[in-house]
Image (cartoon, rainbow, N blue to C red; front, side, top):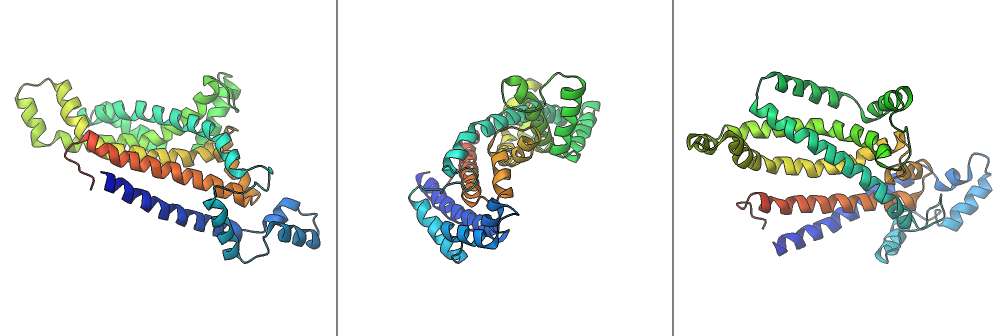
Length: 305
């Protein structure tokens, strides 16, 4: 186990290096940060002076090398837009994004688990058919469209929920549901497929032949053995929810990292974009490692070497 974790950590370092390299190059190739900061009324001389003062006149690989040197000392640079340490800005907004992501994940699991299990147990029933309608309908609706529709209905027409901002549960409810329901569609379909495969196995038929109650057959033998692909998908869904939060935060004016990232990209704020991408990459790599380690807990036959 220790060798596996060490190997994964070393692999994660290489992944983070690749993420920083690709992100840095893409942001620099999209335009001149100095021109974006000064605006359209700036003269070429003003832009050139700012580029020199910020070190943007050096070759791009020299700039990247300088960034890696700062990163090795824990310095993510200062935001061009806010004039504050980039990492501090990201960490300040991170709790809001986690709050939205976890709320969406809870809604995802609360909807997909019972719906996926019932659809598999009651195959081809009216519940299974309604589940299919939910799955295809939810996947067909983009998150931004669902968010705008939710604001129009529940905030403007009915006045039940606030349209934007962050506060109590009422502020979290609508963006969490919009993000969670969209991701629950994929999870429902996967759990149904996995449950159908397990319920057709010999050990399940043997359990039924022994007279074990159907509820315990489904829970202990069916659901538990169907969990591994679902746990894997949950880790992927967490990463997708973090990414989907970028759109949701923009629609609902949620003060999270996603909205901060959009502002940084629009203003070509290199340190802020790099800090945001780096933090997201670390979180996703950590979640993937925890998902892999959970396999041994779910199924003792799985060994991580």
